[in-house]
Image 1 (spheres, rainbow, N blue to C red):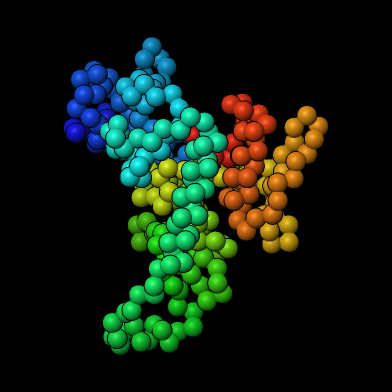
Image 2 (cartoon, one colour):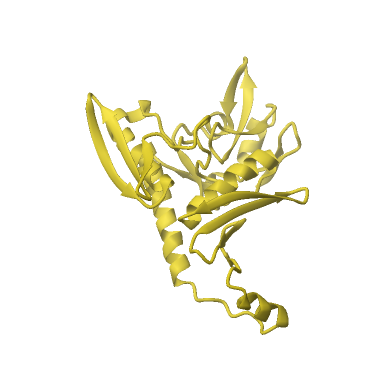
Length: 252
């Protein structure tokens, strides 16, 4: 393992066998579109080329096993043959996290005067495993983020994951490449100019999804969160349109 620095002195972990091949290029670390993951690229004859394709010679969707997109060692790269497999894997990760959260026993706090006062307040928020997220007395998840002593209130959400995604969106806006994210491997940005994902809408407190193909409209069901509805849309879009599908969650 060795360190590769970008032109802005950002540090990337790579394999020693790849260092000599990567060393001659000037690398830049940026966000790729609406994706919350980072993408390291260089310029060859005026065209941007990713480290993944040029050095690792991988032209398929990938995921970082340890969740760190700056760790580009080959042993940390998980390769998927299709976009559908990638999305299925992300859905599974969310489901496993939800199960783990449900199994976690409630932690006992020390019996201090401060803790006793906090428990006496009906509106005292409960903590979350995600950054910037807490549960209100009304059963909804609240997202907030701070910068330069200013607190940004990001709203209330039905699910913990949706609130965490809202946090990630604002974190990237405020901190750029230095943002600490809840989901470094998936898209959390909203499509530009709108508050909705493609093919989703809210109806009677449930998010619904649908897609049209060859003059046929496919209704995809009702979901608790907009992100779940957007994932259902992406699955059907890949089935109907293949590699030409326009997705809510584009792949690295």
